[in-house]
Image (cartoon, rainbow, N blue to C red; front, side, top):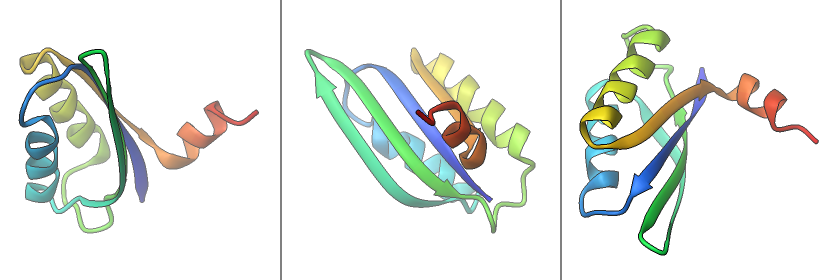
Length: 89
């Protein structure tokens, strides 16, 4: 299964490293990543593959959300098919 991870908040050192380290620890593979910083605000979108992840999707999503709160960031994960359906024009 593939999913979209979004990270938004104030820019600082280590955001990408922290999120990627957590994902790799759960055997989640990052397939694509796009990030930008605009006037001190950080925004990142990642396409990830959870095929080898042994944790349930909900648990991974919740752990990312909680880590986001700790880092004062918004971190959300959605299944790719749901994300695409919501953003279809």
